[in-house]
Length: 215
Image 1 (cartoon, helix red, strand yellow):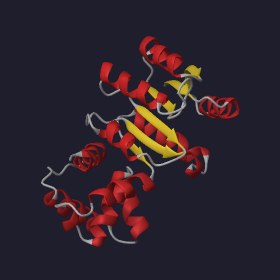
Image 2 (cartoon, rainbow, N blue to C red):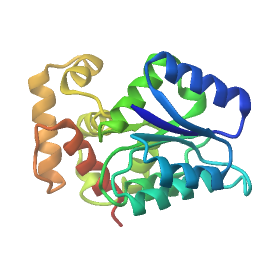
Image 3 (cartoon, helix red, strand yellow):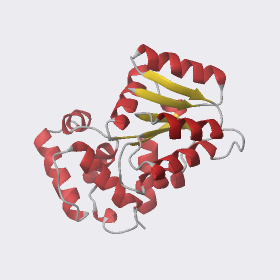
């Protein structure tokens, strides 16, 4: 699996390269500026891009804007964003096209290699890998709107875990309920959101996130 990595801090960039290579990823390019990222994404067509939000020369949202432009040119290009903060606008922009293959992780909440590698693989496969704090803020932003406001507290818990990309089994284990109960809650959620139910985890996550992005 070929990766384009964009991170301006040398030590972090080097550490990410070594970690990814240790898990059999091929580093197509490891860059530190926005223009370098734009060129690498256009010319190398990686399987997934791992991108810091703030890159030179602007040190604002350079990295993300490059990734978003690349996704417009190549719809569905998997992008995993790394950031120090929850930037709701950035998360919404990533989710807006509904093509999947998106992730948003907070750097200081990635606690081990397995967690990070799982996120990269999930995004590369067309799924989502959203930090719980990102999901929580997206939900809170819409919590006064209907029909999200109509979800029960338990349905809201299930929805947050679904949006993180968790399987029914993982949700059941975390909430200490049965998988049948999770399936029932999920069905209720889709019904209240007027979204078609699906047994495909990636499709259901993307449907929920696409709904959250509307409006």
